[in-house]
Amino acid sequence: MKEIKNLLEKLSNAHGISGHEGNIRAIVEEEIRSYVDEVRMDKLGNLIATKEGTSPSIMLAAHMDEIGLMVKYVDDDGFIKFVKVGGWFDQTLLNQRVILHTEKGMLTGVIGSKPPHRMKEEEKKKVIEADDMFIDVGATSKKDALKLGIRAGTSITIDRELRPLANDMVTGKAFDNRAGLVMLIEALKRTNAEVTVHAVGTVQEEVGLKGAKTSAFGLSPDVAIATEITITGDHPGIEKKDSAIEIGKGPSLTVLDASGRGLITSEPVLRWLRETAEKNKIPYQLDVSSGGTTDATAIQLTKAGIPSGTVSLPTRYVHSPVEVISLRDLDRCAELIARSIETVDRYF
Image 1 (cartoon, rainbow, N blue to C red):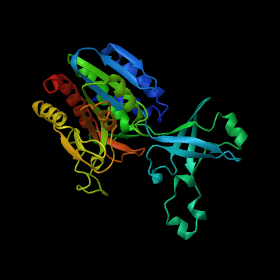
Image 2 (spheres, rainbow, N blue to C red):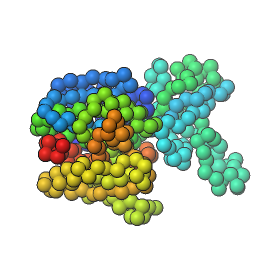
Image 3 (cartoon, helix red, strand yellow):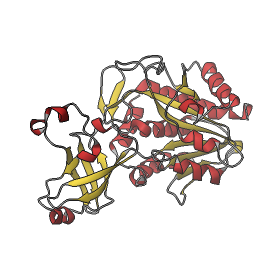
Image 4 (cartoon, helix red, strand yellow):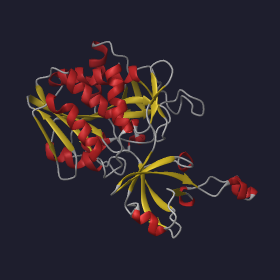
């Protein structure tokens, strides 16, 4: 469990918003190079690692990008206005510490807004929107900010590092989807499969499943698994009818997401994953959800269609800087994928 925690920590603490995944790609490549026959980067920036073997070919997809921000412009006093990159709930951004990845290096900033002491009563009752926030890096003017290397287009990530919680839980940023990358990497390390495996670190998932579309088109695998995280319903503020998934009860297998507008897992894929879990005594959960989807949706619709499924890690507080997961669940997810690779030729 220590090794899986260390890998998650390395990936979670690293930084890379959509379109700026280079730091993450370098870590993944270093981790998997000795377990595959070829590693390359395609034109969009996807990392494609291939272990050559027999048919059928299987694609494992885990997106490398995290949600973040980007500099829109700097005002005359040196304060930074930004746009959101990916699906933020604005309240989670206020008063966060951030890192600006400038051409001169990393720079710390804080997200601020009008102080409540100067708000009218009706203003205090309203949610502060991202458009009314700004970033303060300590610059004294626009000219000073420019000297620091800040420009329109500078990427911004949350300044947060992984920390342990009680039992086997940890909290940190970007478990969506650095946890999925851990699952992919660990599965490659553990499997003895003889089939062809394409392990893909995809780009720009948070802004439209873009890397999955292009990489799946180029690889044209026989079957695919996206490794992801999924929302739990095991904490205050959410009911089991909205999500029956719980931390500590094993991997989540998607049956349907986004009310069917996203992925509807094909019956052979779902049967393959369920039977492999049962044979190996890996506890699992079935997920039917009305919101959100994964790279599997884009892969499934590639060319004439690719049978696809999603193995997800139960996660609390998704799309926040304090996501929470169970390391035991993460280990079980990796184990299920490793064993599934070894049984894929019996189903496809």
